[in-house]
Image (cartoon, rainbow, N blue to C red; front, side, top):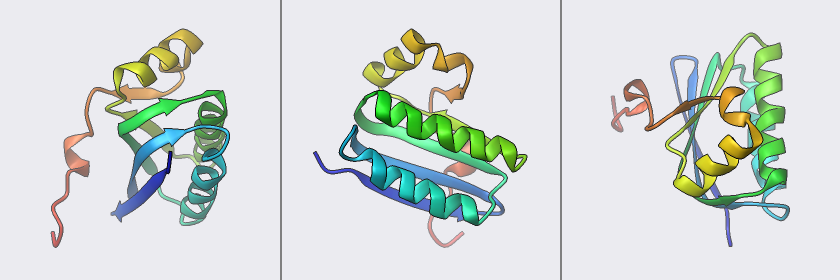
Length: 115
């Protein structure tokens, strides 16, 4: 399955919306997006996972790597709106206590186009 990643930045914060499956084959694409994004130095990144159907250990490692880099830069990386299958992976691995996990995308990230 194809992975789509779109990023929207506003006032030092970024919303990364991911669609599809994060696995061994698509994780490098996500890693590249995070590498590019973190060069811009946002202070907060929220990952919208509401359209992620599946995430394997490779995908979780990409998220952990991005979290580590954000913390090194003094920033925060958060996960928002994971579907039940992804939430279960976070819980089983204990990563739900490593990441800040929101039930939905935080309101301040719901910026309408043109505002």
